[in-house]
Amino acid sequence: MARCSIEVEHLSHGANPIPAACRVGNVIMTGGIAGGDPANGVVPNDARIQVAHAFTNLRRILAAASASSDDVVKVSITVRTFDLRAAINEEWLAMFPDAASRPARHVTRYDHFGGNIALQLEAFAVTEDDRA
Image (cartoon, rainbow, N blue to C red; front, top):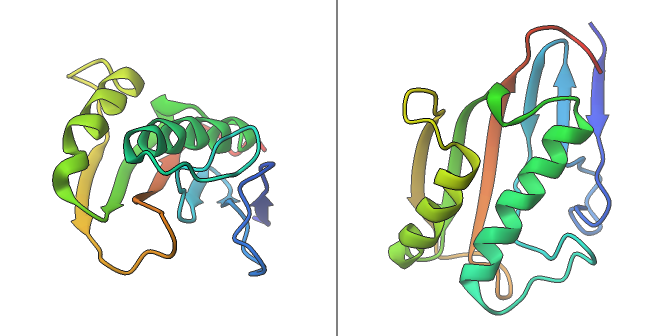
């Protein structure tokens, strides 16, 4: 199976040559997904807005990889502060409304984000086939 980089507009890693995600067969792994505005990539100062943008950006990456939220197995969330938990839960429930069908999730606190970045998501997804 060939590895395929997944690129999404306004979701670059700056000068680093890193794709938004990677797909091999039916497995998709994202890189770090920050809360930049999907329209222009600018990270707003409001951390709650960053949370909403991060989940929107996750959806965009999944769509670019021919996947959906139904294919997500685990989401790792790294936050500057645990005060974002309510905002994360709000977006989480919007993206994964069925309590009987939610991916695993883990939240870790990290103090060394650059600039005003308040969080990053990483997701692991498995599709039913190796569509690309």
